[in-house]
Length: 136
Image (cartoon, rainbow, N blue to C red; front, side, top):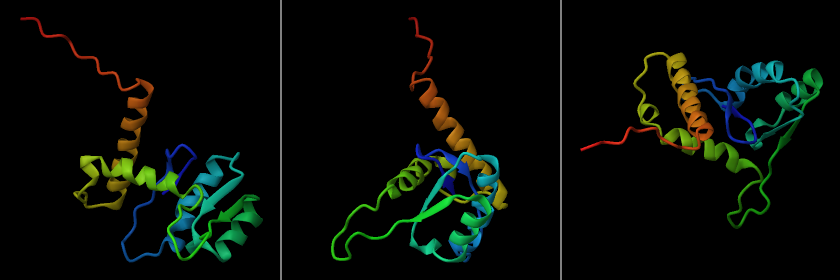
């Protein structure tokens, strides 16, 4: 999943559990880089080191910054890693995503987008519900 700095989903790709994130990253990142031309930096964790970083910088001119652990002995939050983790927490609150009910991965990705649309609509309306008052 690729998210922006607010934690909103830019692109989502659902694959089998035995596929490594690095091998799936081009299916997620390349459509995002082609659609959003103003992206200047991509933040990723250390599993994305290697050819992908060089290829994205050479083709798209986008810097891919790999977050490193500050210290190995104690727990410290990695910079900007919490943005993606917060998005995962928002998605975990959706009842439709707690179990894998869909047969096709595309359907599950669609449910991710539907949950994010619902979240954005709640934010736009400032979480105000429009209920009619009961009159007795």
